[in-house]
Length: 433
Image 1 (tube, rainbow, N blue to C red):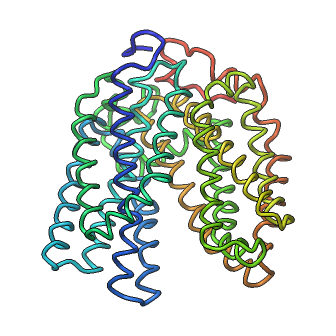
Image 2: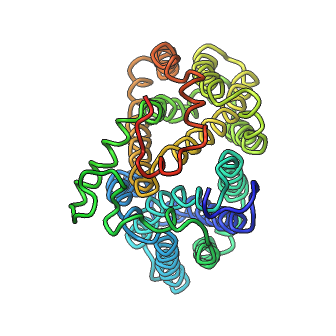
């Protein structure tokens, strides 16, 4: 692959990984500190819950146009600009808190800007990974990126953010600004394949597009990326699976606190330990995932992952043992890390460089939509049919998905995706049937 030297992860990836991990730490602390600050200002449930809407809304509003932007401009510079913008707005928030001029409206406005930046930044970051990583090491690179995020955002940021908030409410947000500043410096030092760091053409068209070379609307470019994704049987199936399985997973997790307290007899510490089980599994999967994928093949990684999805919902629906549920969540954490590793690597292998942003953002949009629907569905099902209803529904959906998609992930199709491409195949992007 052009732009890479040797078959290893070098200093360029180290800079990208460090930037991503630092950002995850800062974002995680702000995520913990934000509701704590709101709760310190008001006890109105609607105002408190509005924070979740502020967090999710940018993903629905800006994921698709953000992908167009990623494919139109220098991706490295775009990431740097986003980081410095987030430094500025978080600095304003921290200063306002120190001077007692902050309030919930300012906090939510800042979080909206920060999360909007996160939508575009994450899409751009996924697009530049193939520029700094050898093709044969994409699984390892994605595993390291996922593992760094898992440690910082789900293990370190929570307790650290809560502690710093007790010291002073502004500190977690100021630290978050600092992590974004360091990320901006590190990303600015990236170098790699210009075909992936910079859009192939001035308007984000890929070679072979019937409309390449002409100025087009954002809608037309979003449609181009969507049509290309639909033409790829493997990526299309994985994207739809992510959206659908996010519905059932988020529905399950939305009412997990009720299952933990009412059925498993756990307190707040025990409930938190369930998420720790999943985080530890995710960390293990990230650490050894590339070797597991190589040993059992990507085909069986995906297929076994679908079985794990069904098994998790069955355990949550049928078991009254906290140990069984904790073990199921641990195994699911391993599966989640492996699934993301394979899904991201396949998308990076198959997508033409100039479509990388739009294809990635379409996947994020569908995933976010599944999360939003699932958050509502879990509560509705549990309220109407009982606490285990979301889990039985999730189990039935998972079994149906296994039956419908098992043959899609056959060895020949997945092996073709992993095979070295022809010299220009990443630009012409012939569909994989």
